Image (cartoon, rainbow, N blue to C red; front, side):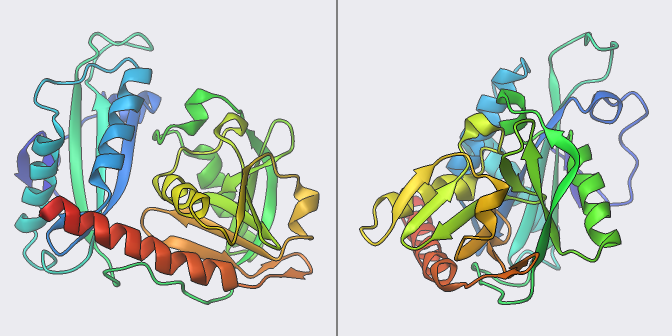
Length: 288
């Protein structure tokens, strides 16, 4: 079942038309969220990012869009899908400006869609499988506030994914207009050299990721690592000890190879355990 503005529809239902502004102009935002055992994980972080993004795009936030209301709509959607409601679930929450207008909309009012898909693992697992990456240099991320938002404008990710498949890579790293490494196709990037961990700053154009934010908190509280939010040159990739990707669905994905360089997974393995512990404590706190 799919939730469209609070009404549940079968997955094969037709409830959007050719005037949809998300389709026409990419006038849309989305959140990819994990649900486990009755809990919408990191919901406050996702909610606050969504509200901030809607304000930046000058969307009108409905009065009923409270954190409690939208969480209840997510839970309603999951529970309506009886075959997966007891499983870990991936939620996609999409909000878009309503139909009408050309570039200038008739209204800033919005609609939303909530979708749910079953996941395998209830917690983050570091899948130690080969992940080979390459730079994607056909197009660049234009650093700026818009590039940090999770909008539906994902053409560079789509074309980059096709490039990766055509060339038998598992992922690609995106560059900004200054030729600095920004992120991977499906998440933020972290580079490890010795006890130093680096990740690009938001000013370089990377997504303002939820797991990125959580890892910044975790690493910042550890004495065993030093953390830097600094630009990363492609030349640093071959000197690094580790390289890993983060997103809200997979958690941490270790890159194993870039060109002739092969990477360790020791720090990623350490951090995924700490990430699970933080989320578990947050889930317990939100239910108490």
